[in-house]
Length: 201
Image (cartoon, rainbow, N blue to C red):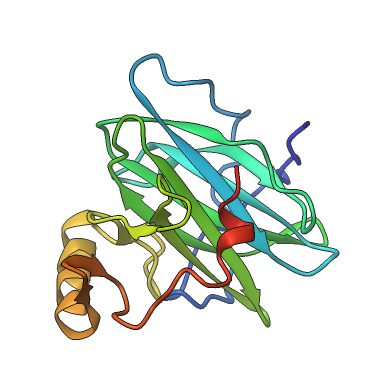
């Protein structure tokens, strides 16, 4: 399918999983080419209002959140084709909601994709804000947290330094993390119920 074009400027600030503000860095370039070396698959799914669109944006400079490039874009009832990420190098991704053809909010994650894995960037609209999470969906019936994924967007800092983001993630895991059947989970009581339609290829 033809990807949904992003507007000339894209807003990329974000609050911690629930955002409402906007800013306008340089416009993203054309869709990214397939990685030359080992790669990982990225699925993008969004639960947004019928008049909204959603997109995944990656950055050529993953550390500094610079050089935005659209990876995939979708409509409420039509998920985009899988996108591809280079494996073994840091990736920074935004889940962006476009409302009335203008960026409404975004959530930014950084992680290092592993070759041959399938990742799911899943977001939804929450009033005037949005929420998004990143999981390893290589086993569709058993999605797992991405061990090194860190949230880079917090109030007042749309591109939190990676070391600080990792420190925040470690502190959060101490409070909220858990294990189930010997495997780490974000919420010990979490299940895959309700995720099946979002994970399908």
